[in-house]
Length: 337
Image (cartoon, rainbow, N blue to C red; front, side):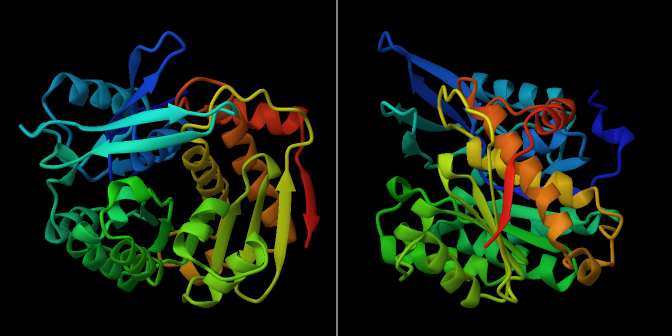
């Protein structure tokens, strides 16, 4: 059951894009679906029972109302309850034969970009139980670095767990060098980084394979942990001290499309992390001390969350009970690397 956010303390604050994915159906028609990586993550957290605050504004237009409805249904609170006049961001989504998504974006003068570093920081300062702050994807574009960079620095300085999902979208930027630099600057503020194998290639990280690339990326930042997603190949969690674990589904997954898979994976990882007794405000150092049993639980919950998402069209995040049921019925394969 999802409870309204006012009845739960806000534990996670998210900042970044909320947009409409226009997904092409088999008949060629474009179907609007609420989306955006940070929006998907936000809903996924709320639907798994986490008190979550979304920091960006939504539009008063038709698409903004659709996004607001999804936020409400997930039990997520809005930092800016009043909608703004600017239009909703759009993404045109193309799917290949394997259901893998590619994107084209329309994001000039849009609602979710009507934020400031000061406003983001002030909203978080007003939350006494805030444990985790998360951003990524389009928020890491160079033109928005003056907004999200100071906010990330302030969250790290305040002792909150900072999570950054690289989730690169090359189609959104005209200058890839500036984009890469902006992403890398954000990762310098993270305690936990999430990347995909595609992200590592787009960042230009050197290495013989994704695991070597991920280790190189982790070593180039102060982060304690890095989660690497490998699509159908599962996921790896890397620790700063060199430990690494891999988890993958033990049962076949019928993929409809991959929209939102990584967002649901990260939400599942954070939900499982917050279930640990050490995840309390002011106990960041303890919260980052994970053993093999902790990691197995985190990856199992994250992998199951992603699998349940890809079994449906668009990003449809699962509930906590659905994830628990899947991990019980099909425990993922887990091994130390």
